[in-house]
Length: 314
Image (cartoon, rainbow, N blue to C red; front, side, top):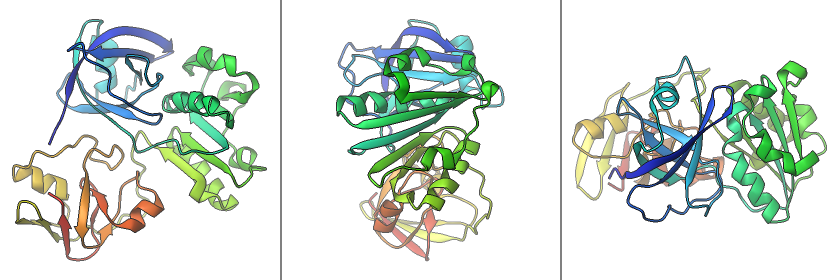
């Protein structure tokens, strides 16, 4: 079930302190896959593992563009991109996939923190093309660390920069006060910013209009039990026991099933699988409350059965 395609690095550019953008074109000379704002791709880095990066270019431009923040405390993928990647290199790329799609609306509030600006850049363009009303609040440590300011400049006072060095701090009440009930809120950034916004939208009663993308899974403040359960694979006619403390993804991979997987934290959506019966205990950070209530899919890497058994479309 895994699917990758080779792309060539056509260009590299330093967009801000420790932020490198990468331009990719298909190695086979074919067309770039269709994508929409909010999409991300998976890139196989030097150690053979995959990393997810938001597409920050424009759909239809003939290349895929990402931006990578060097993270000294990361797992090594960003350091490899910054230190080893060169124009002409060939990368294995999966996707695009989109769990952060821009819904149609008359008005938007976009909130970005640092490298979280990347998925919002094409959203801003799409909102403008649709003649929607929108505003972007962009937070960062210093102006020098905030990429793509040049690209945002032409939007004038629709874009507000809040560098911490100049006193810019996330204030959910300031951002949310006065919003009408038609405005959709899209946000991406570090945990502190997301937590402040989560609390703010709950207080303002607009949680159903708040959409986020996470780059790292938040810590679970109230860890839940991971009891054993059974999964039946309907198409293959097999059953497997998933022990307490292990994921369905790890059990099925060990059994020889070639399943899409990347983050294994419930934030990338690679392992999303259709559920035919049984109640799911959703533990991902992707699905909306409405999607969870539908109970027709799950992320195998983190979600479990709420009862004793699940039947999957595998």
